[in-house]
Structure formats: structure tokens, C-alpha cells
Length: 315
Image 1 (cartoon, helix red, strand yellow):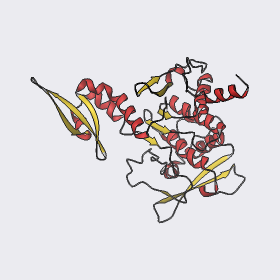
Image 2: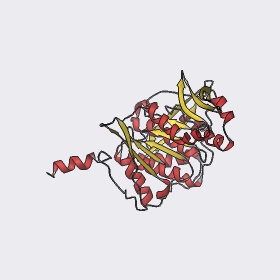
Image 3: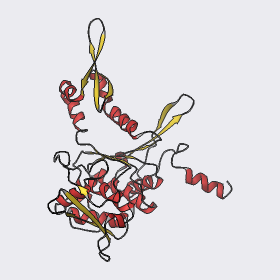
Image 4: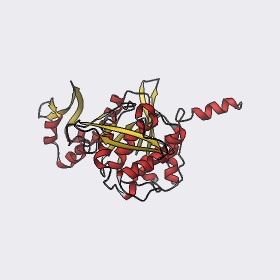
């Protein structure tokens, strides 16, 4: 699990992640990755006796030229799930994806296919290692609601197909007491956390799940507990990458390490900051021990609350 905390565009962040994962490719003739219109291209260094010539080749064709061990690395990105900070909120209906391969476990960038995935898989069993302790049932429906109730106390969700239309409706209620309500009549926290829970519970082992600002529209308790949820998913085999500005998310993960939900060697924390003197990005990676303690706290790293409290008490 990796945390990114920096003021940069999401496009730039994903590019850095992609380059970081594939930097080994440079040793096998890949000199650069470029963007041409709406698709990425790899720049191959063709080494000759007299000179080095750069060729631009479509990434789909470039895959054919890679060594087998590198092809396996590239395959990891074929099933990558990215959930944006800008998710669908209060909408009346949710779409059904047209490409089944794409929609296998992918909730969509805005979480738009999460309702459909729940409707299709609500009675399917999920991995025991991803279940919440409050419910022994393994079905997706029961575990979605077990985690929802933990993150947002007493909340429940359900979905329904709309007859003769390629659309799904999503409903929420308060622990079986109130009537089912449409997202338009519910706070944004539920609709924002719902696709994260679906994506985590349905992800295949080894699948990459990238989430931008999982804390969006959640109060501090919910932020801490979504950190615990993602820690449990990461421990069960999902490769979770989070970009967050929430100290509550971080503390939820630290608690998970302390409570043995996930081991410290499965957690990586990276703080990105701009060096104003040379306009370069500096990366600091605090280590986390088995009790959830961090080896260092760089200036600007989730420390604003401490700074503000210090001013309030006159430090």
C-alpha cells in the first residue's frame, strides 16, 4: 500500500506511478513514455553501431517487443482500477457498462458501475480475509453493508435493476429502520464511499486499486475506518495505492498495523514536496514499525493540527 501526499495534478501523479513501476524497462530499451493525443506511446532506443535512433511505437505494439518477464509487469496495469476524487454523487440512475471485460471488477473512474457490480454479484461469496467481523455471511451484499455500517454507522445499501432498461438504481437506509431512500436524499459520504467498498471486496488478488482522496465527504471517524478497510483489502492481496491529504486515513492504517490487520512490511508511505530552491520534487518515505509508529515526520507531513494546537496553547 502506498500513500502519496502532494499538490500535483492527478494526471501527473499517475504518470509518476507508471514510470516508477516500469523504470526497469529502461534497461531493456525503453527510453521514455510520451502522450500522443489520447493514448500513451513508448519511445524505444534502437541501438546501432554508429548512433542511437529513437522510434515512437504504440504501446500495444511495444508490448510484443518486451521480454517475457517485463510483459508480466505490464499486464498488472491492464486490470488497474482508478477511482477519482470526483465520484458520482446524488444521481437517480446508474449505467450498465457496455464492455463486460472492462466491467469485470472495475467500478469506473467515477464509481459509476459500482451499483451494477453489486446488483450482478450481491449473492456471490467474497474472500473470508476481506469480511468484516460483525457478519459471518460471505455474500457481497452482506459484507458491503457490514463495512458500510462500520464506516458510516447504521447505513445500508441495496440495488435494483430497472426493467427493460440498461440502468440500475441505488438505495440507502438507516439500519433497516427507515425506508429505502434515493442518493439525492442522502449525504454524499455514502455515495462516495460505496464504490470504494465494492472495488475492494471484488478486486482480484494482485489487482491494482488506485484511489484518489478516499476521505472525500467522510467525517473523521469514517476517514479512519476507510483506512482500516483499505488496509484489510491490501493484506488480502489487493495492491492498494492511495493519494490522501487526511491524517485520519493515515491513522486508520497505523491502527491497522498496530492491531495486526496488516503487517508493517506491507505498508509504504511516501511524502512528496516541492523544493522551492530548485523547483524539484523531494520524496521522503517514513518507515512504519509494528506498533504503527513512524520513523520521522517531515515538516508539512500531516502536522497542521499539531501546529494549530500549539498556537492555541501558546507554544
